Image (tube, rainbow, N blue to C red):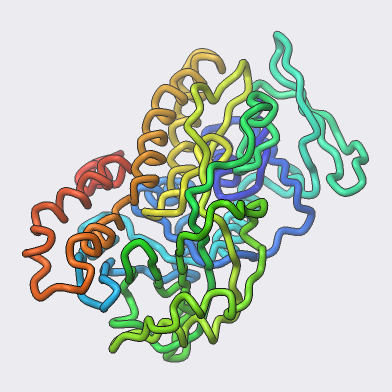
Length: 410
């Protein structure tokens, strides 16, 4: 069997590694000619790190990342609403990693080069189109800047891991239109500062408007803090095409957080001293009725883009990979494999998209704000612990990282 992967992001690179490990002939094509470590922070959860470990891709990430020990959620006044252990501290067999997105992608790329060989990874190759016949699929690749034809390649299966603006998704759903915007802007940045709390905690402060922060690099007694500030705005103004690399200045963010200085975190200072800031509308797409057509299927953000809550975007792409490759290895033909892959992963990811739209696991800070807008003396009187535990457990089950399920998986 021969496979073509379109897209060299987290999902595409992980799929390439998994296909190669399964003995499937695979070639990966990425539009960008010279990948660079762009972006800001990202979290990888234990259920997807278990997959990366089987592919020899986890060990290189460990020295590049921070392993958070807990997640703490606070109201606008800095009062703790909920806290729970994370990763190894929660009893998982695998850690949770907080890492710079660019370092993650570059590490996966180097691992793929080492395992597949340089000749199997084609940079600067943009998918211009594809056609199917009884013998599989033929894909044509061009230089995306000049339009010059670079190559055509035949394969038994084409896997589209080309992101929220997927060329392949648009081919099958040409009338879908732009991504769905929830009315919020999110500013993401990185700032070097002293450790927040114990230096190993992910924090969220707020309610409807929020501020999230967690360490992604630790060095020389200070850390690089990744942060995300989310605020709902006037929807009538619309939004620009979402781009993780659209830069913004602190002045765009600071007025909305000018008074958000607490005893244990100075949020305006973190924003003001940011090394870089990117602005991004919080968007996703409605779940699709179908991912696979003949010998072609979608994976990751091309299949199920979701708003960035619950640390699940990249994690779910990696889980897609595991299911897809297992199906291709075990089913009698490509059609049966893609049917199995889609039947397992499409409903699971649609449930996460819906849950994230309703606030994901961080919805507890909104509930606290609604019920106690001026703060509280005892969170148990606002949200009983049983309710908090139920929200947390339900999201873990929906997203597939329930502790018992992850630890007993082969």
